[in-house]
Length: 347
Image 1 (cartoon, helix red, strand yellow):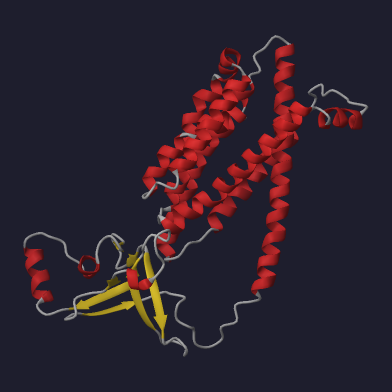
Image 2 (spheres, rainbow, N blue to C red):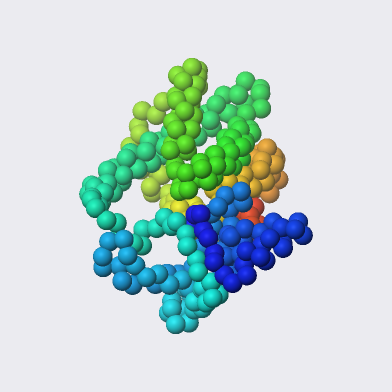
């Protein structure tokens, strides 16, 4: 809602009096004061306000450009979804409010053709599938190459700790994630709506840099040649302990994929977190994981792989308890701290 004006009895005299006292009063702050600051956010330095965690009831939108909208408090969906159980939001009955509003709740007039949604979603899923397959292949090959590189380094009497090799990747996540989030918040504030072009451009530039670096890397890592690949695969699939480990990793992968996919949806849609805070959640987990990665060899040698995996799974369970009990974005940072306690050991 932009360029709002509020007309109430004696309002202008009150605003002038407040100005003489050195108290900055705007129409936006007065509107949010009447609606309730819990559900109304004023954008500093702009003639703009935004409703936060509200439900809408739309009627009379059978014609373009017209609709009656009622706003209600957003109740806990686990308790009720009935509008009758929620409190209607509004201003003083003696006041009149006028704003410029950007919304998709009112039918547009004129040509409303926005393309074929089925084709758009289909093309998106095709590109998303190709990107996910490519990234998964790159990560698997890079991990295998890193492990072999560590083996070669140790063979020549040098330290080739795997955790210290991937420490730089974690450090890059800690730096780039909040930076991109801050850039997107800035663009959103300027345009008045989310714009993800910057994040895609930055990702493409980083992909190009990684591609050039991969071309320049020395790939002579003395990789072992297995002439009987099918025999090795058969030996793996007939080993009960390996099969049990693969089942465990499948379950953990399902849980990890669920959390990493819907965590940011929960942050953005339910808790209304800014973009930079989404990036800071990654930074929080990444920074805390750095000591674990640096001393990973010493930790594994001290307590053993089994104990490390058991502690990691325990921290995973604690993390799952922490997320649904969080009511503000900042609380999720405490649960995000536990990411280093289960993700890094699995690495």
